[in-house]
Amino acid sequence: MPGLVPIVRKELADHFSSRRFFILFALVLISGIGAAYVAAQSIREELTRTAEAATSVFLLVFTASNGTLPSFVTFIGFLGPLVGLALGFDAINGEQARGTLSRLLAQPIYRDSVINGKFLAGLATISALLVSITLLAMGLGIPLVGRLPSPDDLARLTLFLLLSIVYVGFWLAAAILFSLLFRQVATAALAGVALWLVCVFFVGMLAGVVANVVAPVGQDAPALQVLRNDEIRRAVARISPTRLYAEATSVVMNPSRNTLGDLVLASEVQGMVPSPLPFVQSLLLVWPQVSGLVALTCVCFALSYIRFMRQEVRA
Image (cartoon, rainbow, N blue to C red):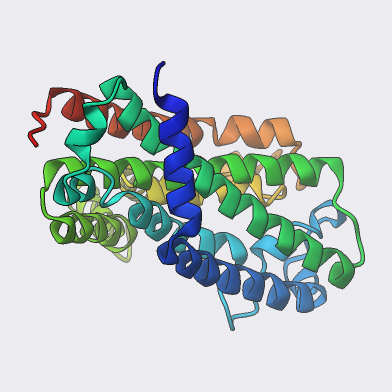
C-alpha cells in the first residue's frame, strides 16, 4: 500500500516527540509503578487474607491492593482510555485545521494509507507504552516478591498486555472517529471524555436501574429472582468496553477465579474443586469478553475508515 510506511513513521515520530505523550507516559508510569510497589510490599498480608494459591503469588504484584492505591490492573483500566483519546482526538481535524491534510492527499499516497497509518502508529505507541510499564513493574516486583514468574504467569501477563492494547486501541479508534465527526478539536476531545465518563461511571448505574425494573428484588425475593437481577445487570453493563475489560482481566490475572459473576446458585457450587484454573480454561471463560473487545475496536475503526474515505477534503 503506497504511502503507508512513511505515514506510520511520521506519526510515530510525532507521538514520541510530543509533550502530550511524555505527560501521559509519566502519569501512567507513576500510577502503575506506585500501585505495583504498594502491592508487592503487602503481598504477605494479602496472601493471608485471601488464601491465594502459591502459583499466583507473582500476579498479586499487578492485582493486589492494600487500600492506599488501586491495583496496577485497575490503573490501566482507568487511565488507559485517556491515553487512547489523547493520541487520536485531533488525528484528522487537527490536520484540517493546519491545512496539511489536503497537501498530504495531493501526494502519491492512497487515501486509506492515511487513516490506516494514523491508527497503526497510535496502536504501536500504545503497545510500547504498556509493554514498557508492565516490564518495569515486573522488574520491581521480582526482588520484592522474591520469586520469578512461572510460565503460566508469563502467559497470563502476555494475554493481559494484548487485552490492554486492544482495549486502549478501542479508545484510539473512537477518538479518530470523533476527529472525523467534529471539525473542532476541542469538541472532539470533549466528546471522547464524555464517552469515557459514560462507560466508566454511568453504564453501571443504568444497568442497575434496568435490572431493578425488569427483575425487581426485595428483602424476601427468591434466590432465582436475585440471580436473574444480577444476570440482567451484568448483561446491560457489558455494552461498555470498560466492563468487558474489567471482567476479562479479573479472570486472566486471578487463576483462582472460576466465575464471572459474584452470585451463583448453591447447586452450581457443589462439586467445584477450589483449585486454580489453567491458563487455557481461564481464556475460554473470558473468550466472549475478548471477542467483544476486538469486535468493538474493529467496528469503531471501520466506521472511521468509511467516514474518512467518503469525506470531502478541500484545500
